[in-house]
Structures are given as C-alpha cells and as structure tokens.
Length: 637
Ligand code: COA
Image (cartoon, rainbow, N blue to C red; front, side):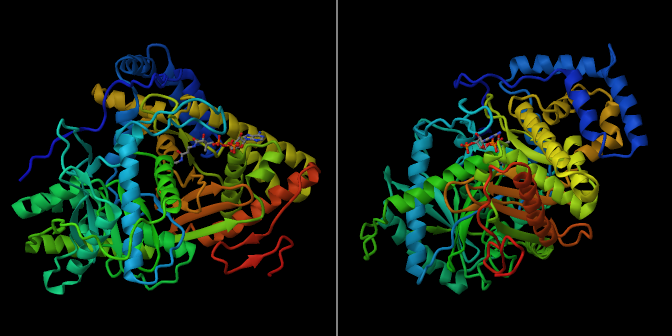
C-alpha cells in the first residue's frame, strides 16, 4: 500500500508580510466580557462572576501570569491562537459533520434533460476545478483585499492552499487536519467520483497530461456505466463519515485492518476533491429543499451515502439539477468557499463547454472502483451511521427566505452599516420570538493577520437589548427615541465589528487564556468553570454574513440543540436568509423566526423612513420559493 506523506497543515512563518495577530490587553477583554454578559444572565449570577473576574485580574493573580505566557507564545508563533482555535472550534468537536459543522453552497438549479447533460456539467465543472487548482498552485490567485469596514488592507491567502489538499482524519478524542506534503515529483492527481454510493478514482493527470473536458466526459460516462452494474455494488461506506467523529474513528480503525480498505481510504484521503453524481431526490426543488439536500443528502434512502464528509470539497451534481458544494469547514472559511464557487460558476458561464457530441477517442485507462471488505462489525457500524443520519434528516428545520422588502442599498442610504443593521434585526427577531436575548456568535474575519481565521462579534449587546425592548414597548416610547436607540445599537455593533476584525475581540483571547493554563497543567481558573462562561459560549444564535456576487447562497445548521443557525447574504435590493434549527427543540421554529424577521425588518424600515425622510422604500416581501407573496401593505398578492 502506498505510504501517505503527510504533515500537519500549518507552516510557521508567513512570507506575506502581514502583521501578527495581537494579544488584546487583559483588562480590556475582561471588562468587555462583563459588559457582554451583564444583561444576559440573572443579577445574582452576574455579581458572582464579577467577583471571579476581579480575582482573576488582580495583580499577581492567574490572569496576569497567563497573559504573560500568551504574550510569550505570540512571539514565537505566526498566530498565537490558530492551533487552540482549530482544536476548539472543529477538531475536538465530536458531533457529526453534516448539518452540525459542514456549511454548504447551493448553486442555481440546473435544467438537465438527460444523463449526458449531467455528465457534461460535471466534466465542465471538473475542468474549472483543475484550472482553479493550477492558479492556487502557481500562487496566481489575486490577493483578497478587505471590503466594508476598514476596507483596503490585504488579507491572508493561506486558507486557499488547503482547499484541495486537506483531509480531516477522525480520531477517538480529537481529529487531525492533515495535508499532503508537496514532493519534488508531483504525485498523480485524482478526483473521487461518488455515484450510487460507490466510489471511483478518476485520474485527472495521466502521463503528465491534464485530461481535457472531452476525456473527463468519457471517464465520467464509464463511471456511470460501472455504477449501474448492480452485481458489483458495494455497501455505502461513505455513510460512516456522516456519523459522530468518535464513532467514525472507531469504525475506521476496524476498516483499516484490511489492506483493500486501507488502499481505498488512502485514495480518498489523497484526492483533490469529490464529485458526487446524485440520483434524483424525488423532492420539489425549492430553495429550502435544495439547502436540505445539500446539508444531509436526504439520508440513506436518497443521497446521504453518496458522500465522504472528511474531504473539504464535495461538488454535488444531482441528476434532477440540485447542485452545490458541501464543505468540511476546518481548513477554511465560507468566504474562501464563495470565492472558489464563484470562480467555477463564472468559468462555466464564460468558457462554453468544449465538448463535441462524440466522446473522446483517446485511449484512457478505465477509472477504478474502490473496493471495500465489510466485516459484520462494519455492517453494524453502517446500520448505526444510517440511523444517526436519518435522525439528522428528520430533525433539521430549515427555512430559506429571500427578503425583498429592501437590501443593503436602503440601509446604506440611512448611513448605517448593513451588516450591523441586519445583526440588530436578528436580535430584534430573537427577542420578539423568545422575550430575551442570548449569547450570539457572528463570524468576523481576522484575515488581516498572519494565518488569521475568525473571531466572534457578540451581537447581543446591551445597546441592542435597549433598542429591542423599546420596539416591543411601542406605545410608551416616541419614534425619535426609538430611532436614537437604533442608532446607538448600530454604533455599538459597528464598534464591536471593528474591534473583532482588528484582533481585539474577546473570544479568541479568553480561549487562549483557558488553553494556555491547560497546556501549563495549571489548575483550571475559576473564570472558566463559572456557569457564566459556559453560558457565554453556548451560542443559541449562530450567525454569519456570506455575501455572493453569483446567484447562490450558503447555509449551515445550528451549533447547539436549542439554537438557530442564521446565514445571510445581503444584496443591493434584497437579503437572503437561511435559518436553521432542530425540530426536537420545543423552543425553536425556523418558520416562526423567518416570519418574525420579515416583520422586524419592516418595522425597522418604517422607523427609519419616519425619522429620515430621505430614504425611499422599494420592492415587496416575497417568499424565496415563490410560494407566498406579501406586498408591502401586508396584503397577499
Ligand atoms: N454608511 C454607508 N455605508 C456603509 C456604512 C455606513 N455607515 N457602513 C458600511 N457601509 C458600506 C460599506 O462601505 C460596504 O460597502 P460595499 O458594499 O461597497 O463594500 C457595505 O456597506 C458593507 O459594509 P458592512 O455592512 O459594514 O459590512 P462589512 O462588509 O464590513 O462586513 C463583517 C462585516 C463582520 C461581516 C466582515 O468584516 C467579515 O468579517 N466578514 C467575514 C465573515 C465570515 O467569515 N463569514 C464566513 C464564515 S464561515
């Protein structure tokens, strides 16, 4: 069996010239921590936490010592938080990847009329992938620059190098993010094609020549035919990767006892990406249903076994036109996923398929089916994994909604940050649905720094609470007062955003202090065993802006059992919201959240219009799937 050449994915040192992520001052972080939690927990608990914080930051106390150690760490690491963050955010998380961790990008629905349409699309897309990969390898991708707040600074491009080279290896306690080591002689490159739960090796470089689109089409046709041979079908081993990480690690340790299985795993682990040729789902392809199918494949009965979740990029091409990408999140952020997806969609639009009708005549070695030896133990693991996935399918409550009342242009005209405004609207919505605010996560990019990933903007600010309370108490407070409170809430949100993107937010810092104490084998500081800390990192509302310039949208699941995932894509005159929650939580409902959000956005617009006559409303509110249309005056169209 070929020996895997691997290294930990992270190189120390960054030739980009970007600054290092700073370690925020201890006092600043602790003050902010108290500010963020003061209004989210009972008063008695807050008093207790205040005492704990005081003790932690006292001269000669734990805080001072740990801060010193963190500062030392920052001197010899390119990014002092990266390893801690990766472990905490992803690798040590034992939950199944689908729904709980892997975001997806949903492409526009395709109109395939026959199988060859699907394969032609797949060949075209793979050509685009190879083109994109050669740009990454040749360091020819243009450097990204920050937009929006503090626009213009170059961003770290490190994450791109991991798109086609990483693999998340399951482990019993924690996973490992591994990457192929570049060798002097490049290894042959291949893609894994999943079709009818079977896995095939599609070599994309043969005899030092990259396959052209015609060749790729020929090979895909051969794969399709091989997948159709019922007698050769093997069990849907990909299902194992959809299980909890510890269960998958356990199953894998049984699987690798057999050399055939080891070889097959090796081919998957070293591939560039997966292309999943899905069977028709038999479902109406609304936006919400396409999002669901992308997130979990519809379970074992549909395409849930036609996946390999450990691999960062899985391009899904459904025979019914349901297409998109499933992404293993640990190597890179959604923004990189957007860049890659947009490149591919533009490539496919801009370079018409180079296929002629006849298949390629060149002599190509046949693609290979990966073989599996399934012991009864593996069969038992498969049954358990299928059940678990079915549970996820049943439990996920998703609502994709295009709010067309207005978009970021209207908000900009109010001289407000669209992102801050949307975040305040999400707080308003949560308050209206649940009568309280909760710890909220908003991803903030810290790619201005070497090896930067994200930190958290805690959007449930005291200022947001003051605004939403005023809105709920509508008769007693004047519009001018509410407008003032809206401004204050937006200002607080914008200030927190700036703090986060400049490396001064509190979540990474607190994580660093906690982890360095563990590393030094010190007793866990009381700050981190306090209930308030546990509450502070239980993100009932997990939000993220993922804007696109092509017609597509990103979505993901909630991060806690009683929470919501809320991904939004602000456009000039509309905003796409993808809201997820779990059906087995009695507290949440994605439909209710979305309906309430529409009302809150409308109320905020009305307030702005009343208080600022300059802005002009446009458009109407419409269900993205086109089912319901509600005009601005509330009447059904
Ligand atoms: N008046 C008028 N216009 C304003 C404004 C104001 N007061 N404040 C901002 N704007 C404009 C900006 O100039 C920008 O204009 P552009 O569309 O021409 O670029 C636009 O409004 C958007 O700015 P804003 O809404 O403030 O947000 P942002 O683009 O700065 O985004 C974050 C904020 C936090 C989302 C961003 O910094 C970030 O970190 N993004 C990454 C998130 C991420 O990682 N997602 C994936 C997770 S997997």
